[in-house]
Image 1 (cartoon, one colour):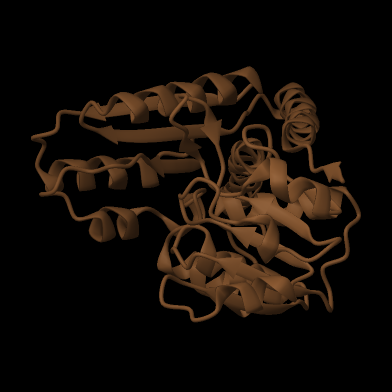
Image 2 (spheres, helix red, strand yellow):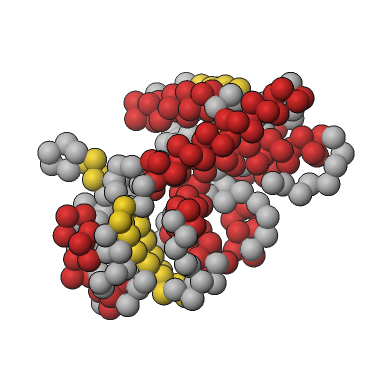
Length: 292
């Protein structure tokens, strides 16, 4: 069994981005800009936001937090998004969840310029993903693919089973694996005989939010196991959806929690911001929008 060390790979990606940003600043005086919108004062969300801001600034990006009270009117938030859409210095916009009940997640999300949707959640970007076209992919699924590629693990022709069909992980994960020529099965809470699907999988991705959901008897020898789950155990430890101690001996490769997919998600976010920076500056300069 070998660990898929997302923490290490993430650090390497961020170092590469840091160098690119430094070189671009020396060349043009410009750096990528990130705008984070947070509504309300959810403690866990605030910790995550500060992590995003600190991490992006450490790479040389400019990042800004736009905070609103929980009672803010939806139109006020929409006006701020339109302002950021028109602000040249802002390349990526992130909408931090959760949102208050009176705020429409769909309406706010869809108001973000598709070229600044660095989370990759807008309808246009999800559509582009499933069509195999250039766009911004959701960061967690993109991180899974990047991690597999970094370890030179073949995806084409492999049997992949995804457990969980969320819009954030499961559905875009399906599209990415299909785009890489894998044969994909996606399972949900109503799937019958789940074990039959996981036992024949070369690659298993589990994202259901339940501790020790994937057990050793569900995994064939030599399978690659990707644990996207983040849960807190009774002992207060951060754990995934996989019974790691039992499954690891059967797996050829497996992601740890923490230090696996979560680390890659952050790296992919910063990579999307860089990609948006390159693309948006080309649009501003009247050049062809090729992305990078």
